[in-house]
Length: 330
Ligand code: FES
Ligand SMILES: [Fe+2]
Image 1: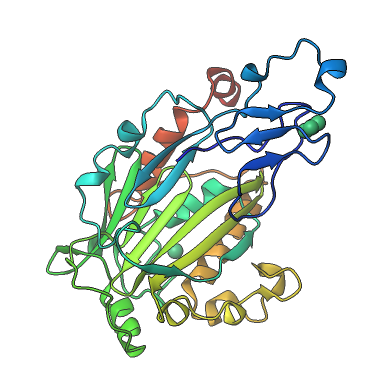
Image 2: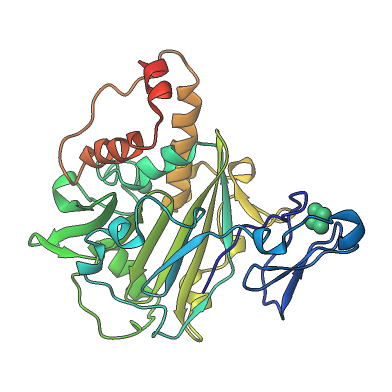
């Protein structure tokens, strides 16, 4: 398997749109340069008159690199990233996993896009904040007080567990398990109970498995104050629809654009009994407050079931902030 940048080597036009399978070549629509599926430049119209000195071997598509974990394909824009895929994964492979996309026959639901008016980091910080669970989500995720959950660090990544059952690590809070049982969907296979409930792959991928299926969400930064959360659920054949639920019933569904947006909320988020809506609501509130010169993070709740995760995330981010930008912020 290989990955390439979607950019023509002539004048940089985007080559392909959408998704699907190609037969044998990629042809740029602008001036019809063509590339093989291995990225090599194959054809250049009027080459002898127009590009007498062009060396085709040096003008193949720019390569990206890939890594595969449990059947999930990760793409890095550089051909040789400074951090290898194995080093990036760190100790995650030692953690219990309930599924494998390569061997489990899972069927995807339709992709759902949430358009959120916040920076991607605001949403990430919300997703790893164990302190808010019992308060913002009092009526949805239940009483997950900081001592009832824990985040475990694996390099830059984090894995969340509920510890409501006598302190034992478990993937599901009891309330969510009760809710899922009401649907009377059978778990798709026998599985250990010590797998994580949420796997945060730094920086933008969130994987949430449970005994009924698995959801994979990706944060796509669109602008400093706009992020798309693209979510897709996977479940065994015949159960995917029931597991993923109906997109149209998600609060904020915009029929015309086919996305979820707070512009379309008909009820107050706390009345929806949808925890994702509650999260988007506070993230957008955080973002609006950030525009004030008085915005500041004053205190973080200590503990791996509270907000020490946010400190961990910000330390990981700092490694990517150039010194000049750090100096300007100080
Ligand atoms: S930009 Fe692609 S062929 Fe000219
Ligand atoms: Fe939340």
